[in-house]
Length: 318
Ligand SMILES: C[S@@+](CC[C@H](N)C(=O)[O-])C[C@H]1O[C@@H](n2cnc3c(N)ncnc32)[C@H](O)[C@@H]1O
Ligand code: SF4
Image 1 (spheres, rainbow, N blue to C red):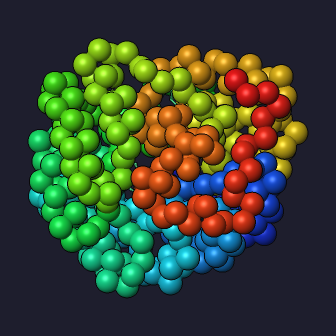
Image 2: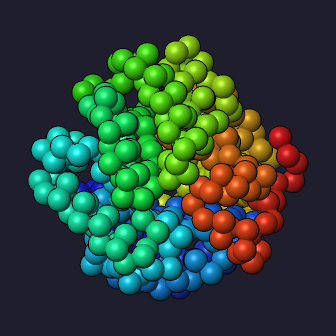
């Protein structure tokens, strides 16, 4: 990101005004990701403001969390990316020497400080057979595990808003039956430990995807979830063209015929398997969020947040 990103990010005031707009639209949860959101000097102010109205998650690769620990105290969940207990392998996957050490240090420090921190492995061919041991290692320490699934940026629209990961054959999951078996094993572990932060519904959907190549869900981009980049542009997902060139235009376009047509297109799309998008496609409704809270996923704080029970105001539910 830092190699490519320009510096004209939204100002603090504009971020806050943008958050007000999201609140009005009925958004209930915000995931701050990047790049690295903790690189912003005003991240403490932004998180404090956002956490008043939304369930907030912050992603870090372990490089910033300890330095910005005070800003993270008000976040509902901090996810630290770490792919394996093997330090060399992790540093290879992340492309940065020392990333394993800093991520482990961040997880331990935040956990000791009472911050709601979890470890977030991206499941790929590289760590497929380690995920159970990895999960058990952190569960023993009462640290929640929140999974990502390796996916790569496919060109689905001409002007995607930002990038997450390019194709890497080494990471592509080729042992599909082993992946299905992993889903079953995680469903089992989940029954005994609520710190496995993935729902049985998602695990069943993933298992079916790997065994049959069929998707058992419809993508709910621009309906249950959408993305906003550092410039304030809004898109259904990071691989799609912006629907609004500014967050301030979002209320105008949210219920437009064009947005409704895009929602229909996205529902049939199979352009990616980013697990967070699958998650919000399967669980993004208010009812879905309540089910997740019931499963003790994240904190039941969602239920207590003021104004947090209003659904995204779609003109027509599709
Ligand atoms: C969008 S990333 C970036 C946030 C932050 N820079 C970090 O590394 O944690 C959020 C999560 O997606 C994961 N991720 C990165 N590349 C991915 C890929 N190609 N497929 C699936 N998940 C990926 C990261 O490991 C991280 O847990
Ligand atoms: S499946 Fe959904 S999230 Fe993935 S590229 Fe298509 S529209 Fe975007």
